[in-house]
Amino acid sequence: MASTDDILSAQKNLVVAVNSVNSTLASIFGTNGNNNSGEISAITLVQSGKTWLATVSVIVAGSTTGMIYDTTNTYSSALTGNRLCYIPMAVGIYVVKMPCLSGLVVSPGTGQVVNVSYT
Image (cartoon, rainbow, N blue to C red; front, side, top):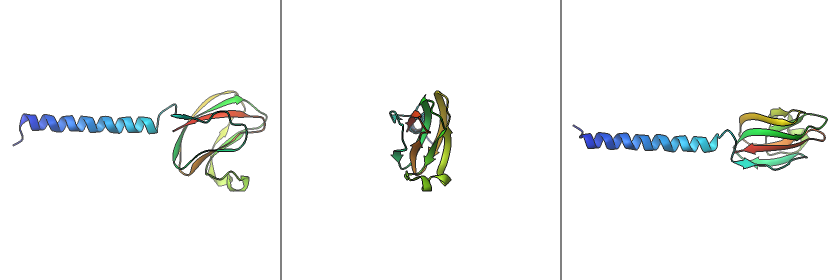
């Protein structure tokens, strides 16, 4: 039979493990993202590999909508099947919270200036 000390040690180890998982998930899927792209006004590969798109900030509205893609390719012929979301033509901060498996490519619309936060 296990002693009280053994039971309490096992419970403590479980709490430490749960806290570690929680910290890891918070850093990966944080609401605000840990990285900032800076101002983007032309199609840009922001991050290659797996990442998490948190927010899109439209700084200058522009005259057409932009697009965000899950790819590492910045050639327009390869982008169509990899769309994640549109970038609206209105100044503001838009919460996206979407995973990117291949990479994060931002293509602002005509005249747009945007910024993305990602992890």
